[in-house]
Image 1 (tube, rainbow, N blue to C red):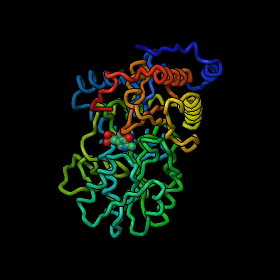
Image 2: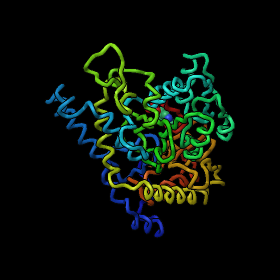
Image 3: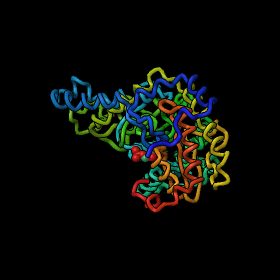
Image 4: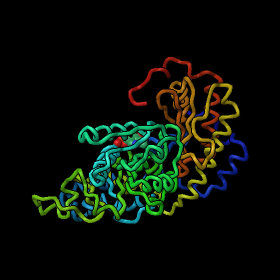
Length: 417
Ligand SMILES: Cc1ncc(COP(=O)(O)O)c(C=O)c1O
């Protein structure tokens, strides 16, 4: 079943926003059906056409024909650094400080472990209770390896009070995966530094979505996903940022030959590579990194500030339209109302969030559900129009008014939600 309200029926003011949108032409860089309103780029970005062409070329030619020679001739070996530097451009990191590879969970663990070693003598790792579960699990796992480490989890508003002179590292998400609330990276980092603590930011919901200025804001460490707003594809490699000033004093804890200065010297002793490459570990994920490299092309020439302006306008429009009818149907806004404090998704709470989202998906409006009762709608200005936003709000209204969600087929909870 496709979206019921056609874009032509969107009000004139919505169509006028699209007509004046400097990003409108970028949608054609993606494979997206016209009858789908895709609002789940906060979970899995859509397929950039250039990425599809690139994977074919890598498989057919670079792997298929050039075989092992490609490590040199097609520069496979430098993909983690090259792709890392391209991600760095989107998060305000000068070259040589970002490496791509591994998952966000692994990157978080390896940077936290290195930071804790570098901060020996300080025993506390501070995080907040709303951090993404994989981040919490990783920190707990680290503490089990070293009984002198204590993980302190506090409510989000108590984080700065919990950082003290015993704190080695403060680990936070820049944008909360549930509410979309965004922290002030510069202020929090400065407060942690005042106690001598380092910071490790999870940028999974920030990279490619909001302007980030890691170097300028004095950040220490960061990690993030690339399958969300960077459209790198399912399971795309993550990235790790380590500020250049820390490279010497913070040797990698998880060591592998790809972090060695000369992997093919096959030395018995580990000698770290220059720059963030030292934090690489195993063989680069060539297929995933190549797709990600091509996916990043859609950001060429994109100013993150103007992208963010469109996100703010789209999410404001969505909230306004939803709130025209939402309260009477039991919907509540969970995200901050102030767009400056909100990342790129809007979270709505409803006791029947799961079947409502399934009914929306059946109508071609794809968002997602997060337990226990949240619907998330992601805003990605590269491929969404204001008419899409209007269609999503209309469909939500239809589903609620008709109670279309109250159907057994929408209530069966899948393993992946
Ligand atoms: C904030 C955040 N951190 C980490 C992850 C997990 O990343 P990965 O699966 O690459 O380990 C996610 C996944 O959605 C996330 O939203």
